[in-house]
Length: 157
Length: 157
Image 1 (cartoon, one colour):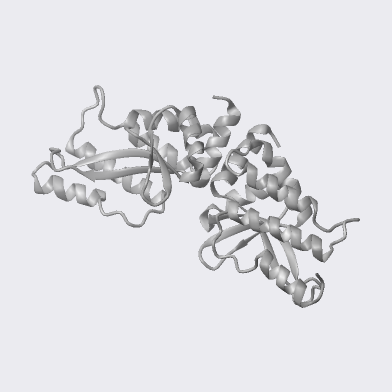
Image 2 (cartoon, chains in turn green, yellow; image 1 turned 90 degrees about the vertical axis):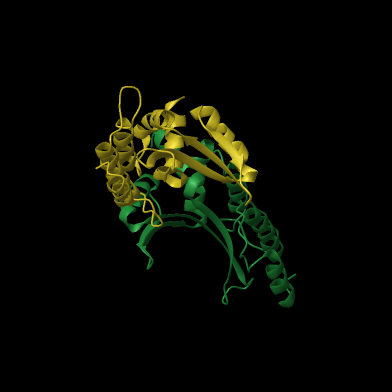
């Protein structure tokens, strides 16, 4: 990708993109919660070609049509989201701090040779809280307090 | 401005900027209506520094704080809006067609040696209708039909 393309995508992401870190409850997870990372772009279905262009450039993720006349391009997963964010970060102006925090959390996520412990999950969950504050999201139901409650009630902490 | 800055601003404008052509009723205008051109960017007041950066780059317009916790950066006027749009247009991906139409309308607007006639206003008003269709704006009350009605009722057409 050219620097101009990266700048363009950074501008678009600053204006209309959404980076999310979410605590997702999983009934089959020992520690109860998963940290889900995603990047989402929406467009009126008439502008789907634009999302397809974005996907061609960013390589990862999938596009789907929602029921409300919108198309949605989503990139999920620690590795892919990290890669995309690292690529765009130098060009951001509005969400740079938010993305730095996201990358800090993602770097500590369980992966190869990086085992999750209850304590670590709780610490990461608190970072997710801080991230969501930057996102100005108000309707969060799963917070680090919930994770802590789960871990305690299961005698994991 | 660098090409990277222009790309960034184009991306941001595609994502979150708003270009408007509006028919504004003016009780003191002989032909009843004025065509108003503007570019608007909004941000949470906490991100006002970003609008200030934009203004520094684009040079024109003014920033104000609204009552709802948002800051608004507006560029108004045929000449200034035309200049800004011409600058950014080559870098747009989503709003290129819309901006081409806006520039076509703006070029025909009354100015130095470019006198407005009722017929011309009506023709331009119809282009404004087409522009608003591209903008997906639904709540328009002043349309070219209204302009036509005014001009006819005042025996100007």
